[in-house]
Image (cartoon, rainbow, N blue to C red; front, side):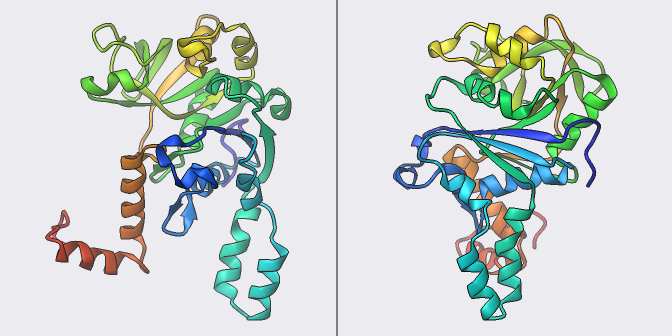
Length: 297
């Protein structure tokens, strides 16, 4: 797929410790948790590639170099599968390295998700870019990055992915406040990170990622530390909205927060159910446990 507008670069923050997935994350990054046999980070990079993005910058922490290795050639695996004539497995093994040009930037200190984006400044090279969280999966007819880039192409500025959440969930997200311009889009005036539901500007939560104008970098540099003494991307986007257009788009598709146990398990099960090689057996197993699938399949 060709790029939408001028967005051909993506940044994927993936520097977190993944403490919710201990003990697995003692040795492997949470972004490598598999949905059957495909790591979460693969799905995120695949989304970028499907949106026509050519360069992907992964911002990782020391000790998480396995994320970069996943997208690098493995001559040992290639030679073995080629020798044995296992063409299907060879194609699966080679696919990740052909998705995009993957670059690696290290966030030496955990100083917030805004800081993670800021350390990618030099690698981004002053162009607009998609920013997709490394543990957030969106499944639908159009990649989330394409949906966001389309709004930038039509309206300019920066675009935040969003969804409506229940009142009881408002305190878990950055909440967008602004003025509606159509059924799915608002002009953002501010973003409040994890607000008290009683004082929140609404129920439209920032999710999945952004398409950001390079003007976000001066905003990040000017933005003071926020909650917990860390630099929050939502605070910088809120600051940017004072001087440049920022839009909030309700994304279409099914979203999984694979950085939380329940979100990851839901993504794993749904992924397995959709596959022709694992779906029938899993469906039979669940039926044996008393599960009844919607639609009676």
